[in-house]
Image (tube, rainbow, N blue to C red; front, side, top):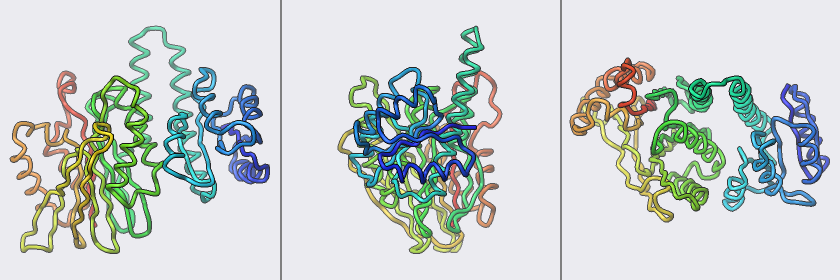
Amino acid sequence: MNKILVVDGQERAADLISQLLTANGYEVMTAQSGHNALAKIEVFLPDLVILDLELPDISGYDVCNTIKHDPGTQYIMVLCTASLETRETSVRVAQAGADDFTDKNIDPTLLLMKIKSLLRVKNLSDQLKQQFAELEEKNKILEFQMHMGQQIQRSLMPSRDLQLNNVCISLRYMPALDIGGDFYKLVKISDDSVGILIGDVSGHGISSALLTAMFSSMVARHGDYHSEPDFFLHEINDEYCKIFESSSDITYASIFYAVINTATRKIYYSNAGGVLPFLARFSTEEDGEVIELDASGLPIGMDENPVYEYNSVSYDSGDLLVLYTDGLSDAFYKEKPEEFSRQMKASLLGAKGLPTKEIADALLSEFYNLNPSASEKYTLDDVSVVVCEM
């Protein structure tokens, strides 16, 4: 049974959350102050702390910072809550090391979903630590870390087929090795809008995989800006630059973000150095047409004041939107981008009426080496593909 500590200066608020969690099978303890919370954490060792930022003695930021900088408690998941979510609050929460952030007035069902997601990562982390202690040889330790990292990353980026707001979506993720630097995220913004983000972090291996997890958390924290692609990318870039402002290592991420609005039948999009998606439109010409969604913008983390172009395009029922990372184009056409574009357009025009899952699998089969040898894996890049039928 997972243990949760609820920290809130208002006893009534803490009791309401406690009752909700107890009813759902969690072991719960409450605290009404920061000092009391830290004392109980030492004894109780919860899996998750739901932490109000406004406490009567010390701030929730200080409590979170203490938890995350203590080797004995740093792996405890922290979900911060506040009466009002602002950009400043989001940045401070990230700097304090919190794993997630939400409004105190969040719907109970959504709160439980966030808690389950955080505890899933915590449980996987606990398994990793337990097995790590049992391994004596360094090569076995590294192998296990990679394996568990793959599980955690795949839990954050499942390859699946689904439908959101009458948009059929198929997701495919193919890391070249056990873990990779690609990531994608789907966001149901409203009953009429779906946000789709796809990106590629610089570098490879464990460090890139950790950055993809960080981006997933950052996207979740900036819910108020999901409907505005350019502003959303600015918020992500601001937070990313602040997190790494004291780092001498240069890391960045290429991201393309699109919002499909089924009411207006338009796609609104902005780009931060990502590859350009394809839109297959079947009603504009007799045989249809395929266009690239062109938009300019520097990758996340390369400049503190970037300019992100904001564009929109209309679509019709049955049209296809295909987002992908550069591993797809580079596998066979790295030196021939024009040829890749021609082949992709031809493939998408021939895919009219096919289920998105068949299209996604066909694109991987045509443009990616699905069965590389052990040595070839080190020359390949990760590949992510998102196919949407509107």
